[in-house]
Length: 307
Image (cartoon, rainbow, N blue to C red; front, side, top):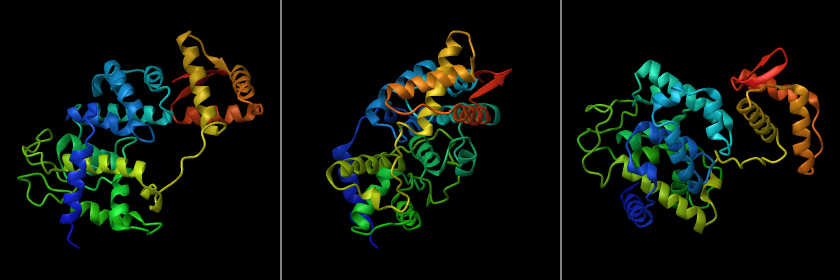
């Protein structure tokens, strides 16, 4: 299949729809990695504010690695999925300890870091280092499904990957550029001189055009086999986890810890105000056990604190 007409269309739409977002004005892999994580299931407008606030607080991977768990969790509040905050800190610690603070460029090395999956790894590679790869996220899926799989349902990623790989350009002077794990021959911070058609500008075009399509046509990404509707937050176990973490953070600010009975009483009050039934104390204990296992908090003689 001749992909040139498709590539020309995407590039044209990318120019027309380009969004001048703050993380597009940098090639710092730390800042780009942060944006990739924050943009997962969070509106762009909200990330614009929170991304800048986070960098004011943790301006480098070294600052994040050295920060305390409570400080990191407090900075993340309101973004959802607190696990991501812990993963950010854990990954920062590894980047500092293993790579002397310089993000690796290889896919294998990047996905070995906590919380970094294939799409985030390829986002770092494309936007920080200008390296080609299969950056398969929801807006990219949207574009490919809309134009190349019209009216087809439950399309598996294995059918999209070859197309995404084939349409991503190689940076000038890099040969074929199809070894997805190779390190750029000019070093980790080398960037292509011609930005008219390189992996960075190509995927920005895909993202912006995909975001536009989602607003103007029935969301094509729902026809992906990988599509999963986000579960309801209010009333869920996830909501209760987030509330318990918030309680522990508030107590930490006061220099205190909390007992299970205190956490249970506060959580029941939250549920009552929301018009939901009170929760069982066993559920609170179960959630605390999960949080402790995941590194959020610790139990000291029945008093719980942020780790």
